[in-house]
Image (cartoon, rainbow, N blue to C red):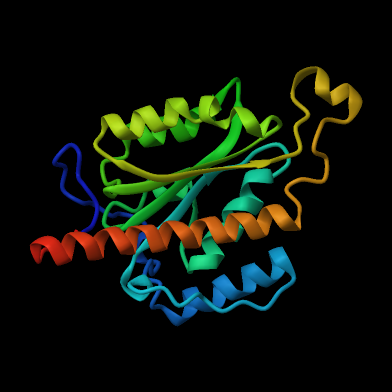
Length: 222
């Protein structure tokens, strides 16, 4: 499976210790961390799913999580379910040679769109892969197609395919909601975390299926 697209033609440069971290899901260390995070988040023992092609994929879940850490919990569940690297936007900027196959991008919703830091990252990062998925946490989940529009548009303009979208209810105390204790105070809950994990696994399966179809048709690897 192919790697990242350099949208500006810049040479991959890595000048920090962060870039020495393994991003391969074949790493025993990464698998152990994934299992530990999954247990902490869900209270359940975890084995990575058997998905054709998973062992050779480089996957990252990149997030911005502020206020109540709603998005961090969802991102942890997604990353641990597929043995992905879990990164903040700040950390991800240092990975210019990671050669990702799949990246998830998510944050809470702020004024009807993803966090500005995530939008800036999506518009400026020169090594996005060909395939991404988008996720968020929000007080009003049903409006997620609207909330996601800015990020999806930014990615598609850069030639990135959107494999899927996910939105979880999250504790929202923005504006006047803080005077009533907010809405979705206990969200994301266990069911939300389980759904997030299943979603990220479905994204890996979808990418693997697409790659197999293309490889079967042309003999090439995406």
